[in-house]
Image 1: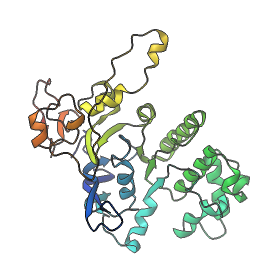
Image 2: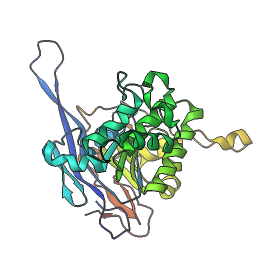
Image 3: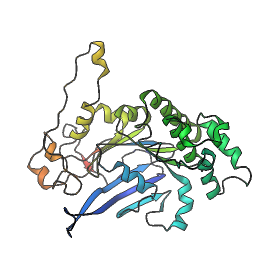
Image 4: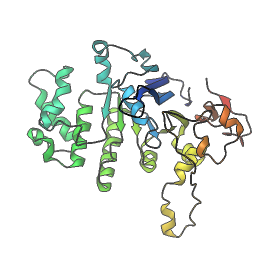
Length: 343
C-alpha cells in the first residue's frame, strides 16, 4: 500500500502484517480460547533517512508492530521486508546480520538496562556480538558513543542506578547506535521522562538522524512530539492503519473521523493568548477490544458519521490525495476526484 510519491525502493516494507495471540477464556478451568488480533493487516513503507510516526490509543498495536519489525516477535501473517529481503520467518542464525541493521529503543529507561552490568558492558555487548571493532578497542568505542549521546565518557564504569531517567535513555540510545543501524524503532522513548528532559532527548534523536541518516519508526502518544519529529504519520486503530499522510497534510486536513478526534484532543496553546477555543470532538459509545472487534469498520461504534454500510463492509485504505490515504467510506467525499483503492 504505497502512500508516498518517492519512486525509489523502500528500505523497510510491511505487507499485510498480522500478529494474533491466543488468550484463555474466563475462569481458571475454562478451556475456551480466544484470538486476540493485536495487529491485523498493517502495510507500511519506510525509506532511508525518513521518520514515520505511529500514533493511536493504547492497545491499537503500535508497540506490537514495532517488535515485529525488529523480529522480537514473529508475525502470525504477512511479511517484513528489509531492503527487499523477506526476514519474516528467518531463523536466528540467518537473522543476526539484520539485527545489526534494525535496532529498538525501549520505552522504559529503567527496566531496559540490566542493573547488574556497568554502562560499559551494556553498550559494549553489541560490539562484541557483531564484531564491530577490533579486540581491545571496545572501551574506546564505548567512550565515543557516550560522548555522542551527551554523557561523560569516563562514566562507563558506573551502573544504571547511578543515572537519572533521561541519562538512562541516552544510554539506551547509545546501545542502539553501537551497531550503526539504518533503522531504529523508537517505542515511546520520551513518555517516561520529565517534560523538561523530553525536549533534550528529542533534540538528540533529531541530531543523530541528520548526522547518521538513520530512518526512524517513532511510536508515541504525544501528537505534538510526533509533529515535530516525523516526516509522515500513520494513525492506528484496533490493529489497523486508519490514516496515513505526511505530517502537514495529516494535521491540516485529516480525513478519518478517528484522526480528527485525536487531533481535537490536543491542547490548543492559542487559547492562552486569547484565541477562540476550537470545538472538541467527544467520542461516545463502547470502546471495543482486539479480542472481539466490531464487524465492518472497527471505529463505527464510536463514530458520529457511521451509517449502515459501516456495519457491513470493512473500508479499505483509500488514496484521497498525493501520499494521503484513509480507511473510511466517506474519506475524500469532498474531493473533486473519487477516492481510489491503494494497490
